[in-house]
Length: 438
Image (cartoon, rainbow, N blue to C red; front, side):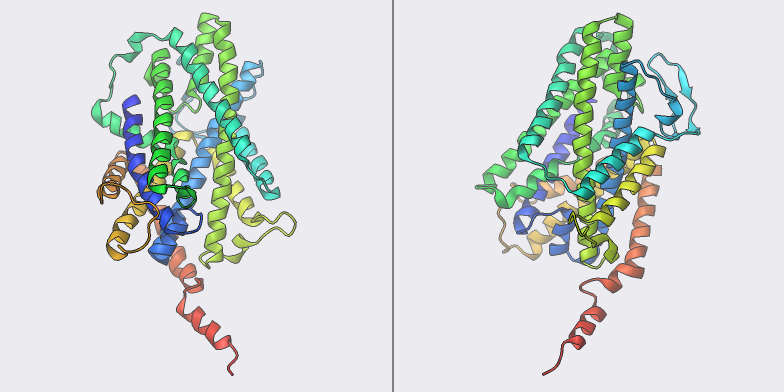
């Protein structure tokens, strides 16, 4: 797992440099959709916008499932054990077992619905519809809480490591490292937000690489520390498809060792983890609704997605639809299925962004760039290669689902979006004819 995390960090480093260059070329804040619309045209922008819908929605579904697992663990910490069918997904392709090896559910579908996953998304949807302004101070406090929870787990867990759990260190070989990188890739989603500040940096050629690299180094060090301690506490095979492996491992060890320190550490980790997931859900639900809003404003989606609430001045319709789109599947599907879909969507977006940098280097070499990825074309080319390599490590079923999503998107574009786009020739002609002649 630690080697997989290093591999993913390297890939993200190359891609982040590409994001920074595109961000510095376009004098407005925005996502990959905004960048590609302004530089590579409408069709590519539609593809990446449609892909971002998948990325944001599915990643938040996975986070909501993780939040539900931590909420269930919190209930158990306080001695309340709700019915399992209402706190687990209805679809469990690998079944469900506890850390003692007891089978709770066999693989497949079962009657139930993950209520905590659904409720947290809908509560945050209400918050977003009413409007929220995230301050730097609030964000810094939440980041510190998350880091404190991680450090608490690492330093306490180190005392209970069993070295025999590290043998073999690479149980599935190097192909397992690649597959592991493909599966855990979504843990790095969000690093590209650093690149969108390229136009605001005083010295973007220096500040942006430092910000990106520092972010990735800190995250990677923390991730590796957690991975090393976690796989030292329990055997790696017991962590498969576990939506809350850290707290479940602490709970298991606290029960077997009767350690009060582990029990209180579990509660601290639960609190920090849930705060982190809430902030992540807020950011990506907000981003998802804004992508829909931008696509609707450009004529690529129906106008209802750009409808603004008369009182709160937020894209209420897009936010509500995004809430139900995430909340309902989050109550049905397991975290493994969702993370795989999120990974392939994100990697595909990264490939398009990196290709965009290569294309613009040739088509518009004279265009002003506040930041240029160092090493010529090395960063975008290596980003494309490594992203495709990680995509190749995902299951074939994930590829089929992804292609199905793209086919649906291209069909919507062909039948609806291109005829109503701001740049549709017939629409432009109609607007010209409507102009009164003198």
